[in-house]
Image (cartoon, rainbow, N blue to C red):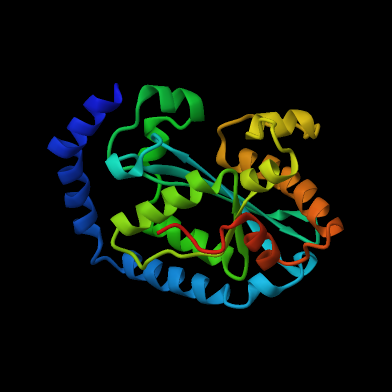
Amino acid sequence: MPDDLKILKYYLWDQLFLKYHINKQIHLPEHRQAEVAIDAFLKSQDKLRNQALSETTFTILDLETTGFFPNIGDEIISIGAIKVKNFKILYDEAFYTIIKPINKIPKTVQELTGLEPDVLDKAQSFPIGMKKFMDYCKGTILVAHPATFDIEFLTTTIKKWQLPEFTPDFLDSHILANDIYKGERNYLDDLISRLQITERDRHHALNDSIMTAHIFIHLLTYYQNQNRKTVANLQQLLGNETPFP
C-alpha cells in the first residue's frame, strides 16, 4: 500500500481500532506486570555505562515488525535477542518471542518473516512479551543495528501501550560500524559479508540478533584496542549518550 494511503487509513480507521484494543488491555494484570518489568530494567542500568566493556553484559536485539512506521500503526510481531559478555556470545541465554498484532499483517511481511496468521493468532499480547523481554534484559546494555529503528520502534510502541517512558542506555552498532568503516556501506548484510560472519536465514529476529552479535564483538574489540573501554566512552564518542525523545 502506498504510504499516503496508509497514513489516511491509519487516521480514518487503524488509529481508533488500535486504541480501542489497547484500552481494553491496560487494566489487565499483564499490563501492570509489564510496567513493573520496564521500571526494574531501567533501574538495573543505573551504573552500567561506567563498567569496563569486558565486564558489561550486552543484549543484542532485533525486531520483526509489520512495517517501518509505528507512529502510523505498524506493530512488533517478534523479538529476538542474544547476550554478549567478555566478548563472547552466550548462546545458552538466547531469547525469542512472537507477539500477536492487533491488526492483520501484510502478505509481504508474512512471506518475509515466515510468521503466518495462525501462528500470530496464538501468540501473546505485547505487554506479556514486553515483560518477558524486560526480565531477560535486566542488568544489560541494549544494542541494535540500527538502534534508530529497533530502539525507536520499541520506545514508540511502549508509549502507545501507555507503559512507562522507555529511556534505556543503548549502543547503535550501525553507528559504531560507520565510525570504523568510514565511507562504506555498513548495513547488516554488508557487514556479514565483509567480516565473513556465518550467515543464517535473514528476517528471523533471533537469527538477525546472533549475526549482529558477531559483528558487535568485532566492533567492541576494535574500540578496546583503541582504549575506549566503557559504554560511556562509546556513547560520548558517537554522540548518543541520551535515548530517543
